[in-house]
Structures are given as C-alpha cells and as structure tokens.
Length: 94
Image (cartoon, rainbow, N blue to C red):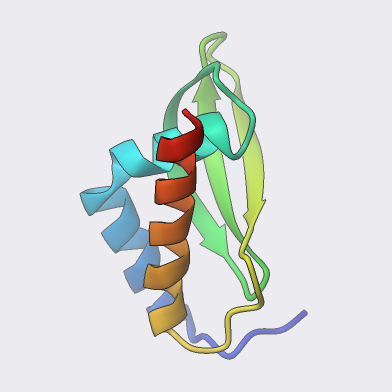
C-alpha cells in the first residue's frame, strides 16, 4: 500500500520518536509487540497501516516488530495521536 508521506516526513517522525521517545518505543514493543525480552527499540519505518520497530532482545538478536495503527493514517498529525494511543495502551497493560 502506498502512502502520502514524503521521505522527509517519514525521516522527521523517525528522528523525533527515536530522539525524544525511545523509552516509550521500548514499552510499546515490550507490551503491544509482545516482546517483554526487548532491551531497546528503534522506530525504523512506518507506513499508512503500522509502525515498524527494530528491537534488540536480551539474546542480542535484533527483530522487527510491526505494530498496526488503530486505523490507516492519512495525514501527519495522526502519527502523534497513534503513538500517544500506543503508549497509553502499553502503560495500562504493562
């Protein structure tokens, strides 16, 4: 599925999440991604349907974790809403 986001928009979202919200990303991967053995997580890609993280496991193995959005994303402000939702869900479940 193609998405309406330029490489610059995607790069900006990845940079922001990885620089400002790495702890939230880890919690999202551990809880919503069902990888409690993750020790680190980096947002490495995103598209209209999901956020894609690369997680480092306690074994040292990197794995890709795809966590779907609640609905397809069609404009940039939805990323903030969806990451906030994921973080709150992970907090509540964790």
